[in-house]
Image (cartoon, rainbow, N blue to C red; front, top):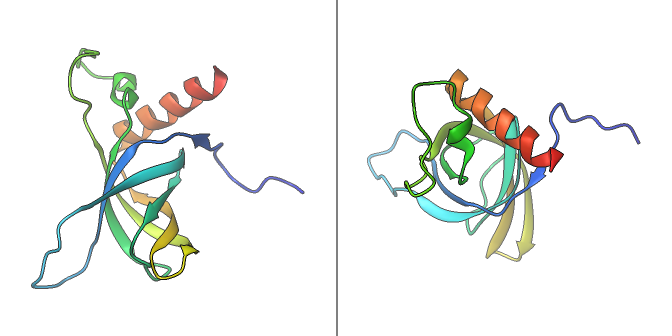
Length: 130
């Protein structure tokens, strides 16, 4: 079967914070979970909430070391707290793992700062080569 993905996936367990982007008076804040894998245009994570396909989510992705690939004056410090990658993503896949309790959520990035997106892709590429 021919591979249809534009970007290779990197298996990477990292922390993620997510919340639904909705116009509501109630702000539930971010929930925490774990990334299962990440690519240059999306990721897969576990959630205790089942979202509808097309739902927009705000994500704070905490992959240690991604930010050292940024092309700016920033000096990477191994002891510093990693900067989270903030993106807006759209739910493209959902699979129930445990009935009414746990879901795999596949998202596609729809809004990422270009320099951050380049840094993430470079980070993934370098780590897949190892």
